[in-house]
Image (cartoon, helix red, strand yellow):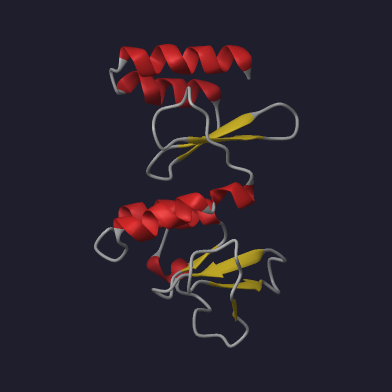
Length: 140
């Protein structure tokens, strides 16, 4: 993804501030072209979702502080991301219409399959995490 994608439109005048579903100082607008909300960070980066913002922020820790990253994580609930005690620390899940489940890792990586998420957990070599994750899959 190009840098340009994350700055396109950041100087437009149609951004609105004060949205409580976003970190302090961030702005929101409805994209006329895409008909979706867009988000403008305090560092002038443009995102199509809070999850996309998290991933970008985690990859750009020289621009975003750990406090800013933690704050965007608290706003993911507005996109229906949920915590679950059986997932690895910092992970989120989202139940999708039709029964699918998406996962978001602690660094904002979107995992669209249960198998992909389980493989990711398995690679970490934490037996307890894998056992917990398998329990979670049984109840989902």
